[in-house]
Image (cartoon, rainbow, N blue to C red):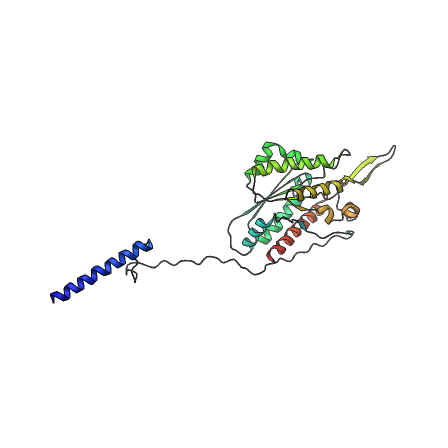
Length: 303
């Protein structure tokens, strides 16, 4: 009997040493085979899994009667600048993220009128949900208008995930327009923005088109297509390509040199000053930018 007790005692010691060694090697406490009766097992909720199916979105803008020679509505982004934003759109769409995407749209009077940018924001919010779209426009603004430290600080304080820049109309309005000066003005603004927001993707847009007015001797004021808008649009596209910014060339999309201005006027979407637009015109611009963004998104999720 005494011998049996000694054997059982030795087995108990060996078992204890083995469990202690196992715990030391694993870096964890010894786990009992069965849970204690007074403990309730915690249920671990499964993590949400991203839907990997292709999730394209149908979108198609119908131009008004009178629009001719329009071009493919797309964002020029060979460097993949917008990929981080498109991925976050995808996560929202797949219900795999709860955060909010902040988009800040700065520019001239076309943005200051609110209709153009807020149409884009409303459509994106309907499609993806948690979108905070803020517009900051100034009448008569050029790129240099936003190089003031206070304006840079205001933009930075909004912590944007995407920054949209819409300029070019006022730069090209004066007859002394110089493409090189315009290029360097854009560079000054972008460098300040990148210093404050180093990792934020930027999307530049070109102007929709405008006329210049003049009055001949003893005649009524007349209007002619501003030929410098085309040069400004080309300069914006060149700058974007040189500095890895995405560009939406609205001027080319709505007809370019030959038809942009004529399309707007034939559809009766411009105001009498032939520079600004009626609400319907700005709404169309917003629909077109939204369509271009969605096309970029569809291309992203399809590859």
